Structures are given as structure tokens and as C-alpha cells.
Image 1 (cartoon, one colour):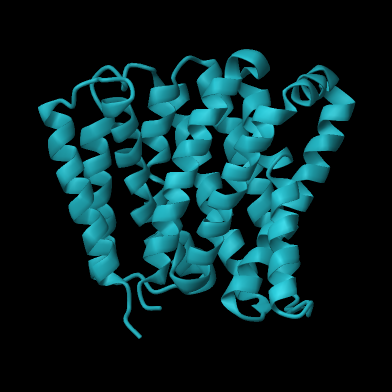
Image 2 (cartoon, rainbow, N blue to C red):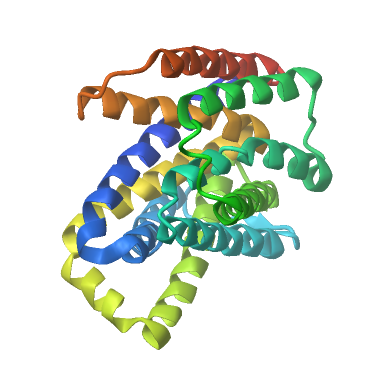
Amino acid sequence: MQFLWVAFTLLGSAGQTARNAMQRELTPQLGALGATLVRFLFGFPFAILFLVAVLSWSHGRLPSFNRSFAPWILLGALTQIGGTALMLKTMERRSFVVSVAYLKTEPVLVALMGLAFLHDPLSLSTALAIGVAMTGVALISVTPQTLNGGLAPALLGLSSAGLFAASAIGYRGAILSVNSGFVLASTVSLAAGLTLQTLLLLAWLLLFNRPILAALHRLWRPSLVAGFTGAAASQFWFLAFALATAASVRTLALVEVLFAQGVTRFVFKQKTTPREAVGIAVLLAGAVMIVWAQPRG
């Protein structure tokens, strides 16, 4: 069980890469906003199914919750929506690559927030691993061209990274507030978070953007597949958060960049540059270091 969080993180990263690819396929019909909402609205029913399955396995016994569960899950759900909204704002400025580059600062912010609010340990080896992994990401994704977007995209990207970091901390805090085994704690937290997000987003769409709601209804079949993939990825993220610090999980999750590189290389037949190859090697070194830095036992 010592390295189970590694498997969960890698599965979550792979699932998120697949979900992102499906969302890109939906963007021409739904727009950036509609395609992004798919992850919440169509992931919700699968989160409920996951919870029903886990409850059946545990003989239908709901866990008890500490008082801190509600504020933690509220923090996780709301900041995830906010981070997504700011990322979309950056995309609207045609600076998506810039936003992605700055979003990869998330592990540093997660480490600092985890230390401050959850008292998650931050050892020198963990900090070094985060630095190495982020250097690899920078070599892969940051070029002089990506930095020409100006100050506004950078601020939006960093703000989005901060909200996503707060979301990771909120969800880990919620999971730790459930008095049960890690599987049930993770699953009930995911179901609670997606229920809250679904209710809020449906209310917002009904009040302010009914055309997108109608478009989502028309494209429910491909959206349902994307929703399942996203919910499954989130389930693996939450399982990993239950077993390891958020900083460790989000640093190892940078391997998603490698999965994206693989899609680019083998699906779109684009060659890897020498700079990207060096970045991949450095990122892999950081990933190995973060696994090694995780406390044993």
C-alpha cells in the first residue's frame, strides 16, 4: 500500500489527459465554456454511481463527518470552479499556452498551502523534487513565444493556479475529515463536491446562459463519455489525496505533460525537439524524486 498513491496519481493523470482530448473535440460545438462545464455536469451522475458501489461494498454504512468537512468541501468545489473560469478567461485572450505554463506553478502553491493549513510536512527532498519537476515542465512548455502574451495572461494564469491549489487542499482536507476508510472517504468527498458544483452550475446556466444548457442536452452522448472519464480521473485523484500529501500528488501529476507529449508525438506525428527531450528527462527525474521523498510507513 506504500506506493498505491503513485498508481492512483498516474491513473488520474492519464484519465485527465483523455478527458481533455474529449473536451477539445466538443469545443467546436459547445464553445470553450460549454466544453469545460461537461466535466462537472456530466461527471456528477458517475460520482453518485461510484458512491453507491462503494456503499454496497461497505454494506451501505454512511461514514460520520467532522465539523470541518463542510467548509473544506465548499472550498474545494468553489475554487475549482473559479480556477476553471480564470483559465477560460486566459483562453479568451488567445493565450492558452501561456495559461498552461503558469498553471504548472500549482505544486509550489499546493506545498505552501498544505504546510500552512493542513500541516502536511514539506521536507527539503520534497521541495527539491518539486523544483526539479517544474524545471522539466518549463523546458517543455515555456519558450520565448509563450511569454509574449503580456502581464494580464500571466496574472490570470497564476491566479488560476492559486485557485486550483486551494481546491486540492480543500478536497484533501475534506477527505481527512471523513471518519472511514480511505476509499469511502474519497468517494463520498467526490460525490459531495460534484453535487455542490452541479447544483451551482445548473442554477447559473438556467438564470444566465440557457443556450449552452440546450447545446449540452443535444450533445449528451459524447458529453456523457467525457463526463465518465473526468469523474473516473477525479476518483483516482481523491484516492491519491487520501494517501499522500497534496503537494506530492500534484507534483507527480505533472507527468500529464508527458502524456500530452505522447499524444502530440504519436497521434499528431509532431517531432520532439531536443529542448523538449531534455525537459522530459528532467521531469521524469523530478517524478522519481517526489516518489522517493514520500514518507515511508
